[in-house]
Length: 72
Image 1 (cartoon, rainbow, N blue to C red):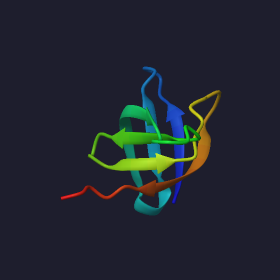
Image 2: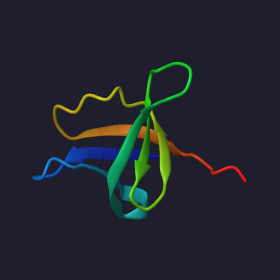
Image 3: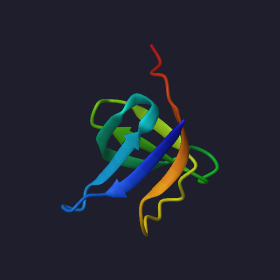
Image 4: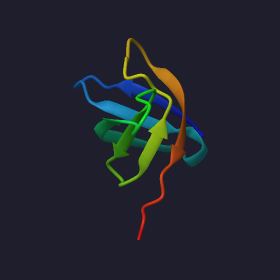
């Protein structure tokens, strides 16, 4: 799915998922295990998204992401 990342006026990182009409604050950003070529984003609603985002945010950017399923 496509996710738009941007910062708001307070400097918070926000993620917008157009297909779900969902905008949430990003609470945590972690490197993807193993290759370091992306980031896992934890959203305020509990979603964890694996992205191809390198971590730089010069302006709003759209990235490819997939929802990670919780084990258990």
